[in-house]
Image (cartoon, rainbow, N blue to C red):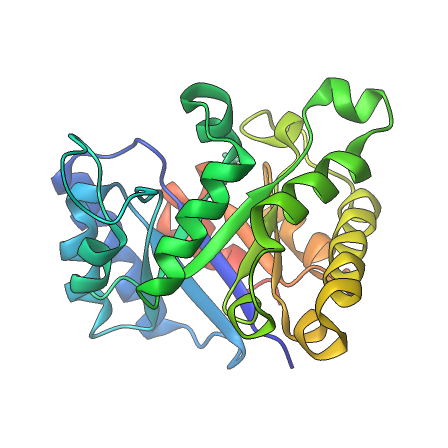
Length: 253
Ligand code: 13P
C-alpha cells in the first residue's frame, strides 16, 4: 500500500521562537494522538529552522523537509542551499517546483529536473509540485499543463529513481485563496498523473507513487479530498501553521 503523506509547507512564516513553539505543539499533539500507521507527517520550515526541526524529529514521528534546494552541486552560488547541505542535516524530503517558485523566481521545468537530480543524488526525496493557473483551467488546459510539468520535470529519471519521488498537485487558483478543488477535480488530475507514470514506468511504480493534493486544504475538507482513490495525502500551507489544524488534517485518513 502506498504511503499517505501529510506535509506542511510553512513558506516564509514564523520567527525562530514561533517555529520552536509550533514544533513543540506538534510533538505534544503527536504524543497524544495515534496517526494511522501508513500516514507519514513531513514538516517543511524555512531553511534557518531545519537543523532545529531535524533534531526535534529524532524524538518524534515527523520527518523534516526543505522548501527548496539549489540546482547546482556546490560553489560560488551566493544565497543558495545545496542538496549535500540538506543531506548533512538529515533532511528527508524537499519540495521542488512549487508554483510560487515558478511564478516569482522563474523556476522552469528544466530547473525542476536539475533540482530533482541533485536531491536524488543525495538521498533526499523530492516532493515535486505541479498545477495549472486559473486561466489554464478556464481554457480546459489543466491536463495538458500538468502533463508537461510531469514529463519535463521527471521523465528523464530511471524507474528506480521515480520510486523515490512524491508528486503534489496544487492548482494555483486554490493556493491561499480559500477556494479548494472539488474532490472530483482533484481525483481527475491525480488519476491522470498516475496514468502518465504508469505508461512511462509501469504498474508497480505508478501504484506505489504518493500523489498529494495542495490548495486551501483544511480540517473541514481534508477528509473528502483524501477519500478519493488517487489522493494519497496533502501538501498543506496556511493550515500547517497551527498544530491543531495540521494534526486534524493528518488524522483525516
Ligand atoms: P494553502 O494551503 O495555504 O492554500 O497553500 C498550499 C500550498 O501552496 C502548499 O504548498
